[in-house]
Length: 186
Image (cartoon, rainbow, N blue to C red; front, side, top):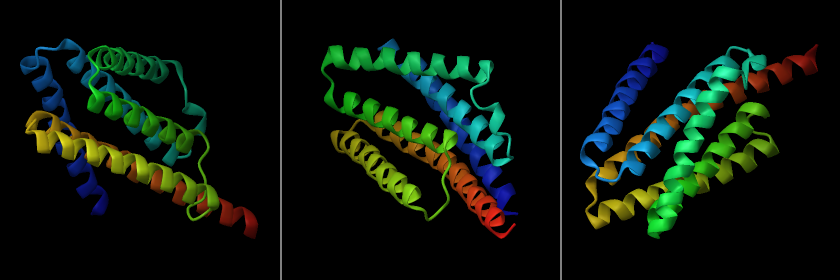
């Protein structure tokens, strides 16, 4: 039942995210912000795909050409937008973009080199990601304080979406712990 609830939650969340991207396409006069949204939507899709496959034990699927092409397109969009934020000297957008890129790096480390839950590596990664996610809350709070409700809502939605990816990673780390324990017994 919990799996069904998570599936419903993901479906609603991802539908809201697609609507959010559409909102940026329609109402935001700056096209680089919509391109940024689209890029992160592609990246989120790749993370969802890869973490699901890894959870099923399909480690060899990581970095296949199709997901890799989608991912590289997503990063190109995110970096294109970051270049615009830098040109505009928009410190919050720059900080937010760099924070999400760092979270992305941490997720790829988790995907490519999973560690046992509770291990030293797990604790280090958890601390680093906690700091990064805390920063995303700070940037969202600043947008909320400034009255930029679209940016505030957008930031909250992305935080929730990446929370779902982190749940997939936690399941992967639990699987890694079970495999390690079985190897020690056998």
